[in-house]
Amino acid sequence: MSGLSADLVVVGGGIVGAATAFHAAKAGLRVVLVERRPGLATLTTTRSLEGVRAQFDDPEDIAMMRESLEVFEHFAEVLGVPGLDVSFRRQGYLFLSQTQAGAVRIAERVERQHAGGLADVELLSGCEARRRFGFLAHDVTGAAFRQRDGWVASHEATYGFIAGAGSRARVSRPRQ
Image: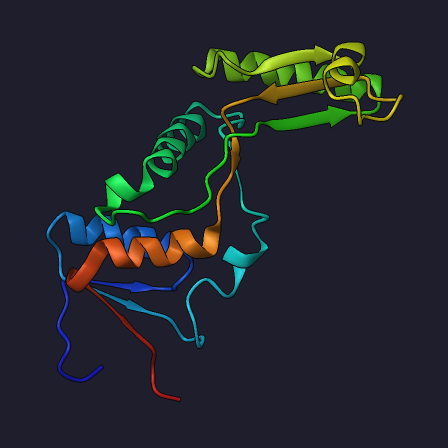
């Protein structure tokens, strides 16, 4: 990395590191992202199952994820990279229980989500869930569903954040 100077050095080239580099570069900082592996998004990002959801318990996590979902919905515009497709799909996210105790925990969680500003999470009884989602097992006792949650191609999103940062951020790999 000789000859490089930066206002911020980001260590780690997963989706979080790439998003950090993008937002810092957008704020006017000169950014260097350092990744020790041969490519970006090759460690925990690939294990994320690519699910993105706002169904969390804490109001802070709910707010953060609602904002993140909006970024993914308008990714190409936000990053200033026309045509960039990260395969964001709002197909919904479904949590299930097969016990009465689990159904109670789901109901309590949905109540906390509603209180935290996530009013569009639906609490479903086992019968309602099976009627709506015909593929469910007969022993489902309760469910929570939010249509506006979904999936994103995390590898493409990681490289998209780097592309959006443009020349304001540089990716570097330490010498072996």
